[in-house]
Image 1: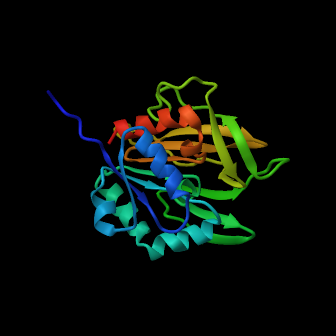
Image 2: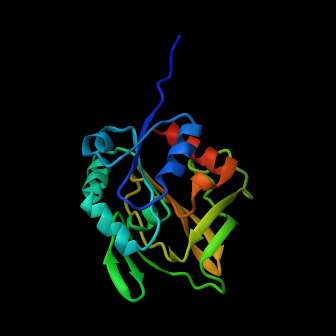
Length: 215
């Protein structure tokens, strides 16, 4: 009889993000979870989850102080899965602009994190998303599934184009609050969501299950 060993997931603890909520949600779907900023553990885990709350600039500073920028880059260069959540997704883009201050991100994707142009900000609460048909991240979820968002900034334009037909283009999911914005991205070993799957009930649990299934 084959025994399936739980996938080891590190929730990267760099001082920004509700790491306990992420830990509980991942454990709920069967992952072996550890909260740490230890370099070796973060590098060797089956999956690395990067949470994030607060200001883009503060998150980037905290990530760099914990060597998280280097860890994310090294993992991705080796095809090792990384998932970003909320500001943990935003910092994967080229830059963020908050209160007129521009901060460099990890530049895994081109794009600028900017204030949402909406009648009510922050965008706080449940919302649906528009996922591509061949999505893996949202597999098994209905089109009207709702996810929990808390944010005032977002990426409003997606500009990455893949000219090589042998390279799979990223799958981009959108949501709308006042205007369309990027709600999730699937790009090889790098996945990310603007919303909080760990706060999104059964829909969030299914999404995390889908991610764990790829590790």
